[in-house]
Amino acid sequence: MNLKGKTALITGGAHRVGRILSLTLAEAGVNVIVHYGSSHAAAEQTLSEIRQKGVSGWLIQADLNQLEELEGVVEQAWRLSPFQILVNNAAIFEPLRWDQVTLSDWQRHLNINLTAPFLLSQAFARRLTEQEGRIINILDWRALRPVDDHLPYTISKAALASLTRSLAVAFAPSITVNGIALGAILPPADGGDVHQAISGVPAGRWAQPQEVGQALLYLLGSATYTTGEILHVDGGRHLI
Image (cartoon, rainbow, N blue to C red; front, side, top):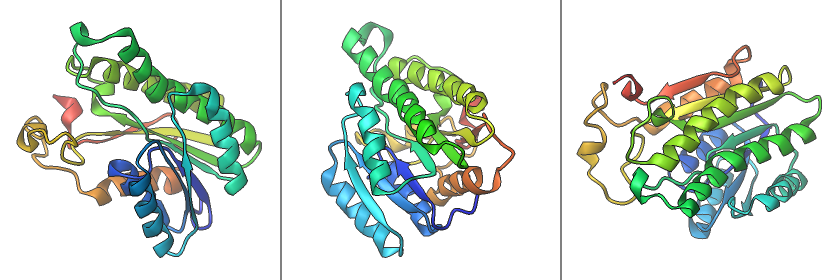
């Protein structure tokens, strides 16, 4: 796919990894529809930076936990600009062990991290018809090597990895569906120990933002014969 002039919808595209993805695509000439939940100030700042790169950008606010509204999110985005790329990035990441998880915690993680990407992908595929399209699901090394410290998050991401492969078959050949499983990309938002975060990473360091961006551009542009793949950008963390 020639990315220049295309349009992408990125969920959670206003800050942290979402911001990296949004600006990477803008730099590549892609118009970007930035979805955000409650981070309005960050969304406005990211939108400004997108437009400074000479492409078009728009904002959409939506609570992805409100599943019945997600068809409307795609419809609203489509009215702004028909888009060929969907990046399911938004997620919640709560440090809950099995004995701390409530039913509400469990369902909220499944809604936002799994069901919302499915419903958005479903609505996107219905509108794309015979056009060429791309879906990227942002995963985590924990999805394929589970741990017990973020239980509902881990389970939801493991299910999203399975969904990625299933939709790759269902949407072929016009839409490719791939995942990027991330590791230590940015310091913990809660101010956690930055050294502990990379203690188990074979590469021994944090990722560079451009390394995440390069993985995204590869799967969107060059990897025309790749679908159902999960590309780990985690410094080897999933191996140990």
